[in-house]
Length: 174
Image (tube, rainbow, N blue to C red; front, side):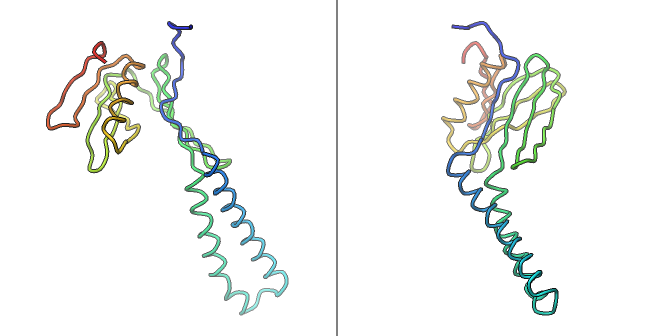
């Protein structure tokens, strides 16, 4: 097929919503809208008096009780690397909000696989002793496989620090 073609941007991490997450988020956002409309209806029908003003904390509590999980469920994070321009793009999307952060990585040096308390963390190191943490996995095998594939794509070496000592794995050995 097209073996020698290097793509400019490579998506390293993409946690787009599944169908179940989309359904749950839409239900939560619908409940947020229902709470707001109910609050407007109550204040419009009964006016602003002592009784309706006393119901405000209940409306605010219900509003945030549905809004916070909706935002958490509908958050999408995407990490992309542009090899030609040596940039790392992180995109965070929540419904209509989109934030893109660009990290200028002058030259990629290596990928490190570290053992954390309960997970294995993959970090990209680039020139200037700077790093960018990408993902964490709970299983060592998955983390090592992902790190190796990432090293092959980036054409850099792997530093495996999951055991008691550091182990360099050359890109040609991956």
